[in-house]
Structures are given as C-alpha cells and as structure tokens.
Image (cartoon, rainbow, N blue to C red; front, top):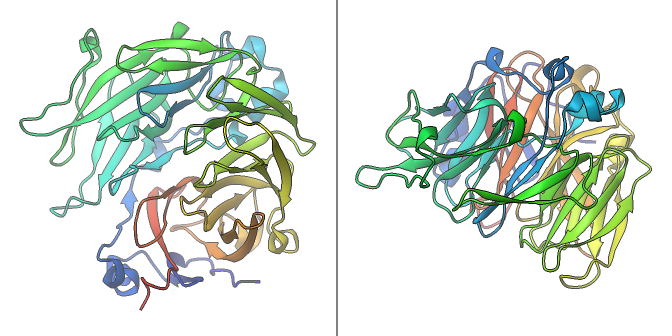
Length: 434
C-alpha cells in the first residue's frame, strides 16, 4: 500500500511512480522538482472559494430548474446539449433531486493543443490561465450578464481558442481576440456580445449565446432530450429516444460513439453513423462518471454504489454496438480505510494514468485523489501509485481533468475546495526523466 501524504503537506508531482510532496505550495520547489526537467512551472491559480455555489439541493429550492449538458463534438461544428423539457420540481422524484450533486461535472478543462486552462471560479464566472504567456501570471476572468449559474466548461476541438460555458438559460461561447484579428461574432448574436472585466494580453469576447427554452439550467443532467447544435447557424436539432433522466453523457475521442447513462441504473451506447443505440443496465447504482480510452474502444464507468469501475470493451469496429462489460477492481481501496464509493474519475489521453476520488473518506484519507497506473491489454487493469493531497485545511477535489497533449506526460489539474486550482505533472516516461 503506497504511503499517505501527511495532513498539512501538499503534492507537487509524480516522478516514476513516486508522488513528491512538500510542506507548502512553492514555485521554487516545483522548479527544483520538475520544472528543470520539462522547462515550465505550473503555478497554482487562486480563486475566491466563497463565490462558488456547487450544485445541490440548495440550488433547486422551491423554484423551477431545468438541467442538461454541453459537449463539443469531434469536428467542432456542433455542440451536444442535454436539456429537460419541464421543470425539475414537476418531473424529478424527491430521490432524483437528492442525487443531483453526485454527478461529476466538468468544472476544469485544458485546451486540447495549448497550455491554456479554464475552470469555474465562481457562480457566474470562469477563469482562464494561459501558461504559454511568459510575461506574467495574471488570469482572465470571463463574466457576462448572460452567464449565470455556471455549471461546466469545454474547449472547442480544432477551433482555436473558443470556450463553451454551460449555465442557466443556455450556453455562452467565448472566443479570444488578438490585435488586428478580432473574434468573429455570429450574425444576429450582437446583443450577446461582451468582454471580460480584467485580464492580460488577449481580449475575450462573448461571440454567441445558445439560449435554451424557458430559461433552462444547463448542467450534466437531462430529463427528456439532448440537442445537436449547429454553432455556425445557432440552430439545434433535438434527439429524444431513450434519453430521459440522463446523469452522464460522454463522446468517444473518435466521435464514433457516445455514452448516455440514466438515474435508474440503465445506460445506452450510441453509434453516431446511423444514430442507433443499445441499452444496458447496472445493479450498482447509476453512472456518476465515465471516461474513454484514447482509441475510443473502451470506456470506464463509475457507479454510485460501487468501489469497482466497469469497463465496456467494443468487440468490433464502429458502428458495431457489440460490447462486453467487465469489472475493474481497485483492490488497494477495497482493503483500505478509504471510503469505498467512487466519486469522480478522469483518464488521461495516453490511457496510462487514472485519477479517482472517493466519497467522504475518514481521517488522513479525507479529500485525497488516488492515482493509478493503467494497463489496457489484454483487459483494463489498474494498480495504485499513491495519493494527491491538495493545499489548505481539509481540501476536497471539486473537479479535476487531464491535459492529454502535453508531450512530457499527463498534466492533472484539480480545483480544490480551499480556493486553489493546482496542476500536477505526472512524469513517468523513461525518455523524459534523467
């Protein structure tokens, strides 16, 4: 069993399966540990934790709320939006409302091809940190009157610096503007144009707002449909079959499949060639998170009442829906004092590192993120490397995500409840470490 970082310490990075810790956050310590190897230090970004309003029962209250999810498609020309057709208080049973906080929302996201990080830093704002900007450590704050109740963020693939922000009433699309090269605003969307209040260098513009019906709240939930949006025209096409009460939706990295799970424990595998789906079911609760392997042939699924992950292996090439569901045991967790129910998962783009958080661990295990070494042949298996501890008193991971294109190794960024967004390089490839 790997050692547990003591309370009061902070994790710096991984070097060859060893998670390095220090007494406090320090750029000097990071430079000494990994900066001299990869040529860059990822300074933590502080934010006002008091401005955050995590989704939960207090957000639903006695008023009407409607929830869905936004995801860019592989081609970047459309966005997938799950949305409900009626108010939560009329369609959700009491147990459904209670389950809303258990869904893993994407609150932090790396640009696919640049060292630019976006994360939710307040109820109505998103922070962007450009680590390619060598002139300073200032951040850009994205705010607009249209952007209320932010729930998740996602970058547009192969679309420059365009960021989608799911919030109450729709989806805000932000784009970076440069001197002599302003962002293009869709015709007819001018009333929604806005600018940031502060930041450095790049000017961010709200180029469009995909408005939902009845001021709906866009999150990771859906009760009746999802919509394929043509962003260039601002038009959406709803798809409804088999998609009531969705908890999770994930596109495969190749765009050939996506995964949709429901609160009743059932889930669907969709192929996007003919838009055909295959139903599955779980006896371990509903899916709270999912992550694809880099080839789009395996998806890991976390369930609300299980310490075991499920791995779905496709047996044939797309668009075949012939697949097998197999367990992925985490034996070190099962035999340890860590709470056995999985809360959040993230799988890096190489398929070699898996991050897992657990619900309400006791004592020194509280708030830790477990890091696993993953093997995908012949089947998916995971071995525990160690744990990441965040800064401050009693830190808890609000959201975390990998940068999949950093050539020296995966970068795991975590937004902590203590008001810091920290990035942890996981360096384990032999040609990188001297």
